[in-house]
Image 1: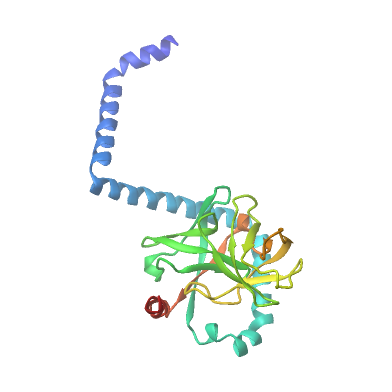
Image 2 (image 1 turned 30 degrees about the vertical axis):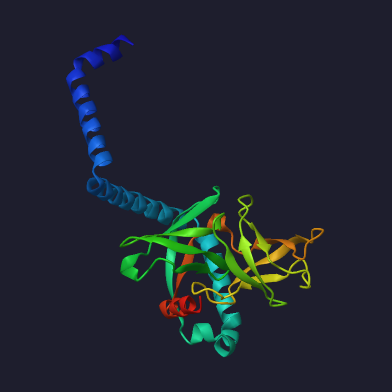
Length: 266
């Protein structure tokens, strides 16, 4: 204890100087918007770069699992090539373009979760582009810098995704209740829909963000409450948000035209 006191006394001038410098810097950033914004941009770039390095290290030690996912993706593409070529005008009429990207940070434990990817403005990524994998809808881009972008995860209590029952073509809205990161809730499915455990849910394609027919999950539980005409449905996601690594940013090349037409109708 005495050594500590001696150290304080010996270096009192330096300590006071550092304290005053810290107070001055804090005042500058808290009272000047320009300096604060520059500092936040600089610090965000450093944090994102560190996260990117950390992600690459994890990927190196996770190559076996990553290769297994790539095999699954390749199998998906091969098994569905003829179907998409003949039937899916969205993809092969090139209304949508896809940019592969890596997830460098991802949260699943909050009520409002976000994803950071290693592609940004330099790669033609824009706000309101979608984020997907071959196994599901992941989120929507909400902020973009030169080399990075963040997206609102569908594991966010403030977002709803338009989906459709593959078997019956009934539309509904998919949302997260903030509990299990592998389970989401489906609403607006009428009791006239003949649903069953294991029925597949796909993207509905009714917005300008996501194309139709992206597989999302399967019904794992449902009930029809008394005095209502709509089911309460739980959906188990195909994609495991706890191990996201590779994603695609999907861009509707005719989004502006689509939105303009929608505004005219409104």
